[in-house]
Length: 296
Image (tube, rainbow, N blue to C red; front, side, top):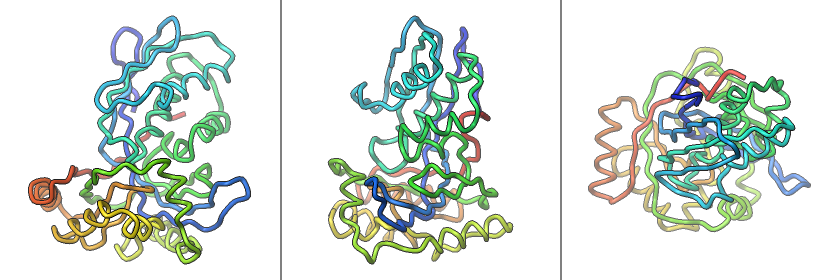
């Protein structure tokens, strides 16, 4: 939800996400892959504040990226070019979501900047235009325009809103590992047996839209096997999650974050402390959230 910040600026939370399912269904001729995924925004977030300025500027705090790698500034540049205007903006991003973690922080920041600047600059872009711009920035960006619970297909550009999932809690841990060119690397390691039909995603969509729950045995991520077999730090994170009581740990996106579903905040908090103190992992507790940065 956008809110007035100060002196003609706007600010919003850029929520992270997890994938309740991430099914890879086919390789595409353009080098991308077809996916079926149930995505869910969660309460862990960055904060984005944007105000008028003479040109486009980026001010980062928290986790810091090289400016040329930051999707927030790229989103602003793309939007200004598309709108054929000369407006500027100071974009302040306080990054609390770990970088390249599978939680979608960069994509969420980009979607939030598109939403804020559309409002701040008084643009009247239609939904198709803003979605197209989002898709050109990254496969997850269209989802983050609306957030909540959604069924995502194609390479990420087809986003179908779903009913809200029941209230639950997530415990997450982020192993200390950097995977160069992570997304491309993870896709390159998939074997034919990792590809599925998308049936689990369709089952969860039908159950949730019908007012039901999503059984843990329906959760799935095509990259789980690859990550556990190729990267010891991820395998140890899965082991730690099992040890603290998570029944069905899975990757968020292409990892390396591992998450599990927990019935209560108290249990999630206890697991978080064990992961931190006993296993030395960065660990977090989150819950589902159901807004994106704005209604566009």
